[in-house]
Image (cartoon, rainbow, N blue to C red; front, side):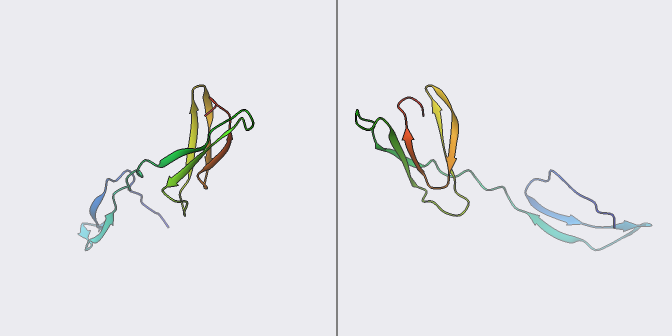
Length: 99
């Protein structure tokens, strides 16, 4: 069975017809939904600061709460460190200046 694809369509309502030997079918109407927007910026805090006795810190994300499809990423910027992603929003064991 041959399939025809229409790729790269923007959101909107489309009508699809078939033509065979000059005869045109009735239209089938369908809707391409708009892409979902980006989520709001998270609410984040340093919940544990490093000390002499405990030289690592903890960052905790409180909003949005963990849930289906939600992940959090922390990226070090001074110095640059590879991103760390998880689904809990709790980033423990962070060394000062690393993230």
